[in-house]
Image (cartoon, rainbow, N blue to C red; front, side, top):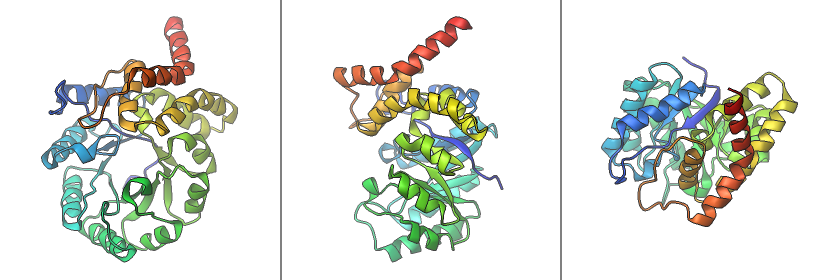
Length: 299
């Protein structure tokens, strides 16, 4: 069983020009950009992959396409959440059957259950498969918060080993690290600090736009080259602050385009950034663009 660590990219879903159909060829090309950069974990159907806007069969087909294309070149994970337990089990079993190394699961969202119901949900899903589960905590979207105390309770369930915390709260990250579970940061603007605090990895949507820089940051921290890592982080940080305070998925796709990897637009009703937002995003990426231009000129 693989131990997950490193940079995990929740891969953006690439649609055709209509936005109504997934574009398999462009999906594979985008995956190759991530893999060629050395990204450690590929995640299908994550939030950055626009899973709430994907049809049920699309989620399964996309998970299959991505798993076959990754083909062991990185660890492979599928986000399998649904509002009810039986659908979550169906998606989770499908992920296991196609060879996923792990799954990521949200608590039931929208008009969700009590915390006892959340526990029962995870317990039932974990009993249905024998691969690791990463609990996905993003209370700003689910209205359910997986606190450190509740995560300790979930860790008593077989197969639950990981948590992705997307609160963007460094104090929360450090509290979760005391539970004995394996904590992945999901709050973009505290990625560097979370790695320093002891997270063995991050689930980071912006990697769709800056895969090489993300892997370099992780490698520098892992090697203890903290001065160099901080210098790189200071170039990355402006874009993270922009993305965190704007429409996230459209901004990630726009950032990828600016950085030279056109992965199209989001599916409606998500809207592309306006001209002012695009100008601000380009400005936030300028420290990375300048380095990239210099690197290409030297090469």
